Amino acid sequence: MLYIAGEARSFGIMEELMYEMDKEMYPKDIKTWTILIASMGRQGRLARCCLPSKQ
Image 1 (cartoon, rainbow, N blue to C red):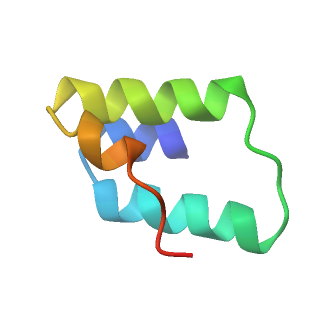
Image 2: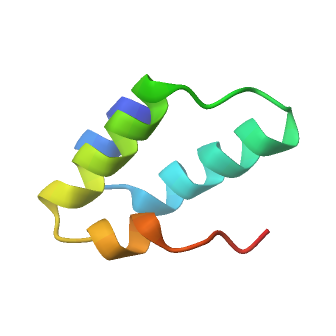
Image 3: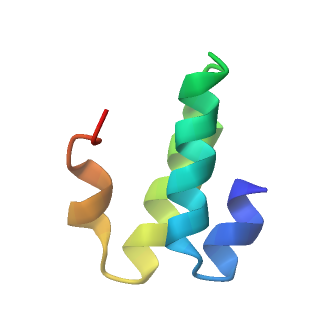
């Protein structure tokens, strides 16, 4: 789902999915971070990806 949201450039949905992963204690692995960084990097939003989350 994270990959699909990234391809659709739905960064709000990507952030919601990451929040839900934290909430449900689902571990973020290398694939999760690769999808996030690649999707945001293609749109020039890499700095946003690297900022600390609101949590």
